[in-house]
Image (cartoon, rainbow over all chains, first blue to last red; front, top):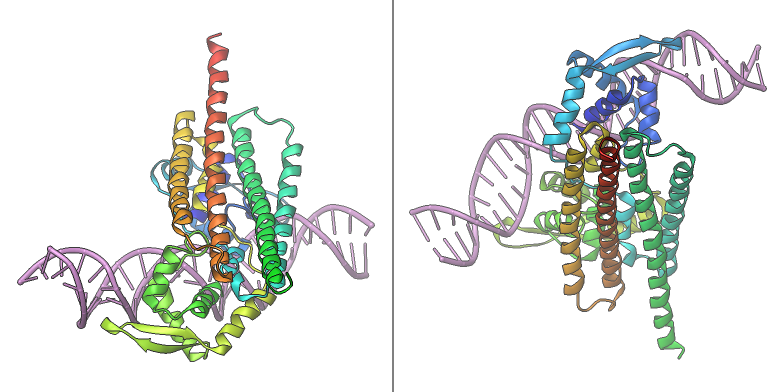
Length: 183
Length: 183
DNA sequence: GCCTCCATGTAATTGGTTACATGATTCT
DNA sequence: AGAATCATGTAACCAATTACATGGAGGC
């Protein structure tokens, strides 16, 4: 139950509303975990029921702030210490990659180019964020954010490099193929 | 519906049984898409119903080989050409990473060390596989396999480097903290 | 004869997506 | 006055996991 622990971990950091959590998953955690508001709100109710979070404050427009209870914080720590994380990966774009051989070379190249562009765009988002964070290194929380942002940067960088290289490979292969007919 | 297209793409390559597909997802496609046999068998039935694959041969122990039909191959191509891949990512280990600040420095380091070890192990599996593949470059299919294996290698390499670096960061931070009390 | 691996399937449950539904506040 | 954004929730459906269930073939 990772969504549960994700929410719990965020609320252990500071009180937030369902809306805030939705944004956090969508922005900061996006390269690590996805969750939509329709999943988050019911999970918040369950966490309250289980005594792991509590309703701590209210704001305008029915806004409800939740915070982690002691039991909630303890549960995050237990999860971090004891639970081996699942290793399932599902990356649809990379699954498509496995079937590139079915496409004409130029189509395969344009698919890889789509990937290169996507990851270059993500990379520049993360790099901007890295520059924006001025007061890094002040405390453990900031340091963690920096470390996880770096993971995102390295991941996107790796994929930009990979797709650039792969495009080159396909172009080289096609030139060789052409040369056999027009030497 | 990525599982569907994953199966279809594999069967467009060569006829396989549900058992073969399960192994393929578990071994070659593991860093890209996961699927268990309990998901695969029902999906095979649905694909037959929809005329995208057909039962082409039988073997011992009730083994059933399926192959893609023309409609099936056409559907893979349509998917590759027209469908924008989903960009949802879910990596439980990295989600845990976001809450490292809640742990004592030595615990955080050992969590990162677990990651380093896991990815180093995966990396060596892929690197062995890269050496085993002798007749690379012979055709588009082999070239695709090489390119996707390379994606896996770069991904794991990136994470080994990242976790090594992150461990260093935490160690450095802890030394600085210690120095303030014992200058 | 027994163990392991090959091989296929189903059922119950949980997790996640998409669509539906509503209302308050702020900005222009 | 109208649009955009904030904010919360539910319902129907689809996807995935875990557990249950069974049997044949080959090796020792």
